[in-house]
Length: 154
Image (cartoon, rainbow, N blue to C red; front, side, top):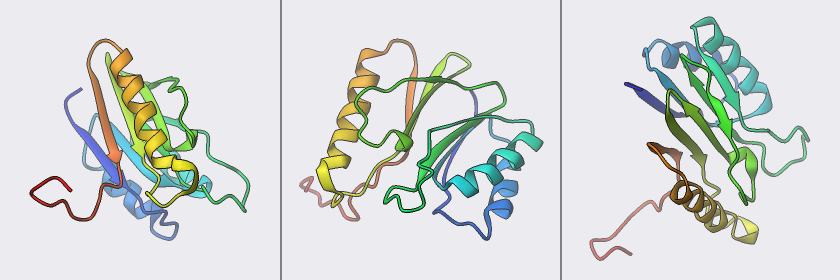
């Protein structure tokens, strides 16, 4: 793997095709996307396929009333092979895939105020997954880190 692009599409629908064309035009070997909706996932998959990418998409909730409509996609010049990540509270937000011998873990972390400690449980599950693995691994995406970190680490 030589070049990776990670991109938060911010759930945008109206400009999804334009964004997809620009990201695909960057010429990356691997593209990790966050905040896809069921509708934009189709647009992105079509655009990326036309540019020579194979895609893997986390299972997105299909229920319109879902409070968790956002998911992740990983695209690569070679076929990404999904790997299960155990105990993720919102499975549409984490996708691990083997790409040319490297496991790429694409994460869109829930924001802190979400109920049930979804963010903490997501980060713990990703940590356990990466710690148990072997070989080269890469974690990328939107981890929803705090807006400000002070010099003392708070």
